[in-house]
Image 1 (cartoon, rainbow, N blue to C red):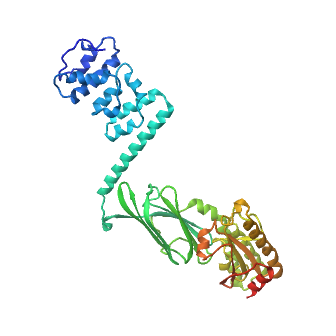
Image 2 (cartoon, helix red, strand yellow):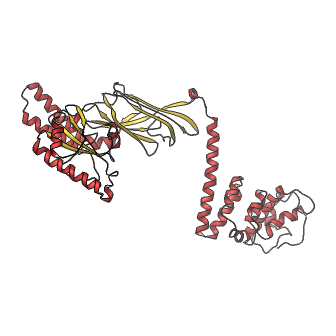
Image 3 (cartoon, rainbow, N blue to C red):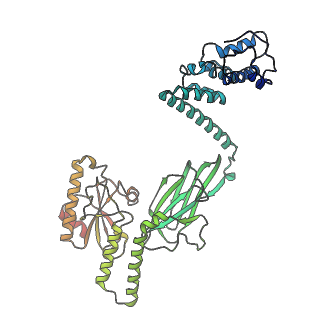
Length: 455
């Protein structure tokens, strides 16, 4: 494809535009205009890359016109481009023989122009499987380079703990009458993106306070994240849980020491600027809080007047327990799923800490169980037997002891609450009476249970 030889001096690149209009006599006139411009651009790169001397130009030109070779043999980006942009369709033909992993090698050498040409060649080939393999190789190598660059930038940030910046986390809150709910974002403002990678997380809840801290990286800088809240009222130090959520957040649930509707989250009347309302959770519990407020006002009014109606108070107590019981959920694998004879209990509805006739004044027999441990999914004999026996207890106990109630806690769904209750090997039965608790050892027959209730 080459005509008679002609001197190619350093003026080639300078006269590039003129030469493509009035082709050099060393280039075949039959080539279309785009091909001539492409070849001249390629030869300009070769002029800069190949040392001048006897036969050096011929060797450089030969790269573009000889049979395709592996890109891995190219020692410069100019050579790689010559292979990829070979005239007459040779570059596209060669692409069919190249492995998609060639892209990773080009990127690792920072040969970006050659990498883009290789991607174009594969796209023109229109082979879906090879294009997918190329996509994977490119993304893998680019991701590795990006990670290395991020690590380098991170090394520039201060390493000493006293010089690392502290981010006071933004948070939102909501409540029902027995618990508070928090969602915490690892950023100073709720509208800012949160850090996605944290380590050394520490969460502590005492009767008055919540304290959280963690280390992480954001925008290639090391950060310390913290949240310290002095809560409005007392909470249960052994009835709380937390878990990571999406988009650089975590959620926290804490039981209140006594049912109440708090006017604010923190003790101080000065609200932190980055503390807001958790709208979705507030909407979920709005009706429960409203009903609780009405019942509380009615009880206070009756107590002040000294004309409290026992029947009215009992009805209010039952309505309150019915409302709270809906906050505890169960799943289809539970042997007590949708069974009204066994009260479903959890941290948000826990009668042994509630006032009233159906609360601490009542003796509660509670079964702590785990459907997964009993293999209830497979309808195992242990699951069926445990369920049948406790359902029998639920029927018989109210008949022989009207002041006793029977409930159950699904520890698969309420694991943190079972841990807080110091639950041992399951199924596990405990009696709660007048603020005290006692473990049942032995059989579940009615005589043994009656003796256990009265002891």
